Length: 116
Picture 1 (tube, rainbow, N blue to C red):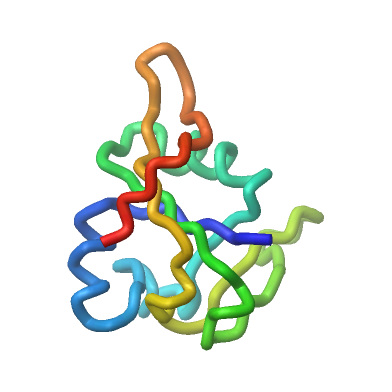
Picture 2 (picture 1 turned 180 degrees about the vertical axis):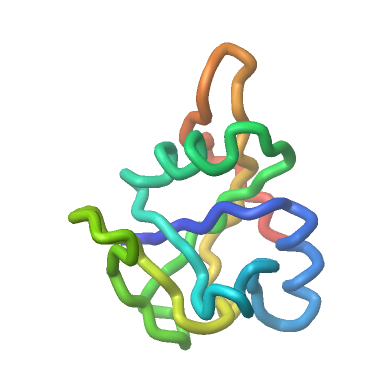
């Protein structure tokens, strides 16, 4: 099983230079928002509808050094994986381009690992 994190390509490329990945809102939130495979598209279409140049990080939870907690902080029943720490680079299995076709919402990426 993998978990996934959506981010801007530039944010990913800049932070991995530090030896770990973390999004710009990490300090504010205290964790990194992630999704299961089944949740990725709803999250992408809801929160990134007008974004461009996105990547999808595929993470192996058992390789993550920080704790992963499945929770819902909004009071709903659906739980999302949250990573409570910066993501160690060896836990990133693949990095995919996340494209949004002009005809509609995001689609789950085809295998095109751009891991660098």
